[in-house]
Image (cartoon, rainbow, N blue to C red; front, side, top):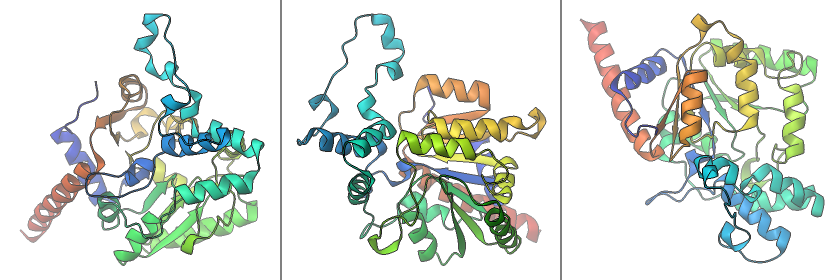
Length: 324
């Protein structure tokens, strides 16, 4: 089972890489999860439940109100992922709702469920906003990371990945802008699945949410002419990735990881880490053994508090060393 206590050596690696600007936080929906004293946003499965309820036009509180899985062979209990209802799969449920009604209807529900107006950034987001990272990658549509950066007075350049890819000339221009931002110490916020706009407005571009969206996205993301901007790809492949509240089961990032990190020579690959709440034991073993990504079972609020403390201690020691 994944450990719920980060090893001292791993903590040291994380804060050292952050201080050296060689760490890229990769944010999933879990960074906005509600806790005892924080009202956040729903997670993917909760959004899927809301969409499924609209499909059946009835109020439901739990997935068990809609369907249950009956296990006929006990051996399958060793593989809980195979027992999961497709009702938990946001991309699949969104795909069906879009076809049952239309995309504007789907977007209205998603925007209402994930409305961030009046919400404040989580402890983790406010902590990240004050760390010397050069790139933050997020799959979230909301603007809570932007709010955290603005509250911290941090200058940043937002990049929203189009589902169908950039126009080649647009990509060249965008990458030149990003290279200049990097040289000037300006943070790049890469929203890989799209973004809502400020003031509750609908997305300027399509967001990636249905299965068809993901398929279209994955057909272009590895294309060097229209996919991930080279400056962003370079940052992702020359440092430690820190996955926060993000499920490493997802097909989209597994495809990106295979097309970027795994193309490197073994001696070029940095050790990476993932912080999740109750991660799958199977996927934890898979990512650590096959991908050199260590997954820890830890509440993200607790991680943020500890990260702030350990980073402050590290910078204090580094400063004392410089002064000596």
